[in-house]
Image 1 (spheres, rainbow, N blue to C red):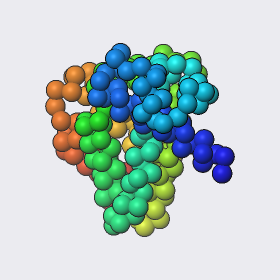
Image 2: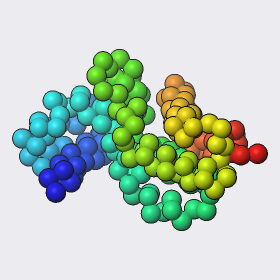
Image 3: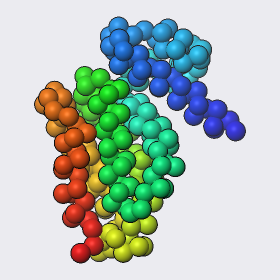
Length: 195
């Protein structure tokens, strides 16, 4: 039970922070506002984060919360292909509408220079577990190639999403991330489908 409470407290802090970052900007958001919005305490905040900058690497946590929300809906999709497209579209829609571009860019840059844990590559995240499950089911049903390991397909899929996000950041969000992915992801997924 303590682990769930820990996840809820940390999650509330992360969600509140990113909401405020989006609404009023990173520089104009204070730790006190994050504590108030998350309905936690200063002690709780500093238990999980050294300061506001530490929250920049927590974006993957926010993404995983979105994947938790989507788990029930993804089960309703018939094929692995539909599940993967659905997840991509839902996440990219959230990013486009709720995550400030400069913060996404900062998150990627901190992951490039960090010497410690790289959250976007943490294979224990909900994201990777969900992808592994979908790919495993897709291989078992004969829909996805089985000459490539589950982990390799998951890695390729994650790389393609990161590539799209990175390019979108480089282009300063000059195009719709969700729409572009809607056109590009099917081309990628064609390569992992069984012929």
